[in-house]
Length: 91
Image 1 (cartoon, rainbow, N blue to C red):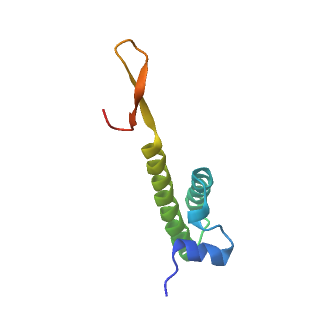
Image 2 (tube, rainbow, N blue to C red):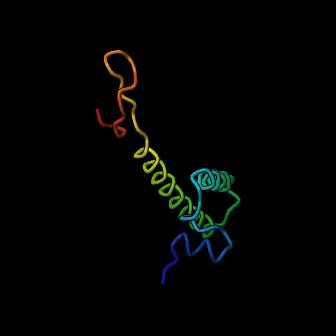
Image 3 (cartoon, rainbow, N blue to C red):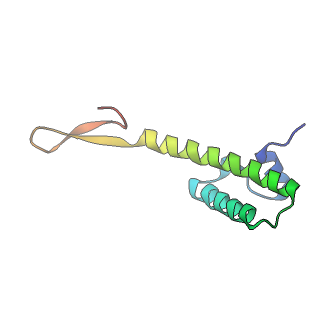
């Protein structure tokens, strides 16, 4: 059985990625990048950090896509007043 980043995180005490807010996931991702850039990490630990970082990036992208889908554009009428809303990305 191979560990996913979530199951590997559970065994090390880190929070499962799926439960993280966008802000928490981004903060952890930034920490991982700093740690990897320091060069003071063994190869095995580097690979594990990279895998968790990759999963965190995917989680952040999914959270952003979900937020973008919820945004509505306010349409203006000929008089310049709000005339209704449409889903983001639709004209």
